[in-house]
Image 1 (tube, one colour):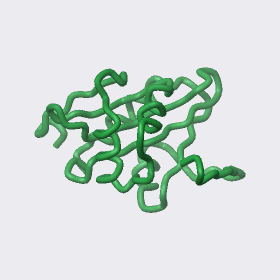
Image 2 (cartoon, rainbow, N blue to C red):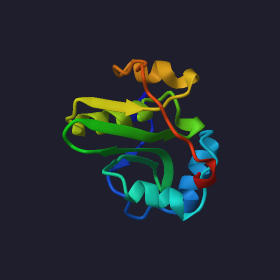
Image 3 (cartoon, helix red, strand yellow):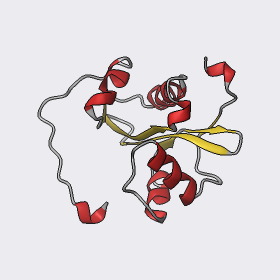
Image 4 (cartoon, one colour):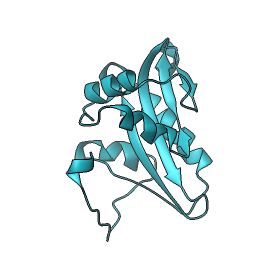
Length: 136
């Protein structure tokens, strides 16, 4: 199905704008992040994979890593009109193929965990997080 829609993948943040990231995140249900902070998060990541349909940003993903043992994947988001077409999987596979580390982790809501399980992810015990909502 993926070949029915012309998608171009981009592996840097050149020409990405804050408004288009905000719009995609809102459409994909990952709202709450606004302003230039969202763009800086992508620019400060070690790896990014963005999906464009023409000039329209329709997918994002990014990772941070120590390049030796650990990596974290964040912000895998696909516009609802493009979900189920393989673009999220392609972005995830792009990141995973470049992360030659022992452990890759991510945070996923229960409703999308089956998507990640198909790429080999599984629940991981003994994980803790500290959240500071004032810094969202």
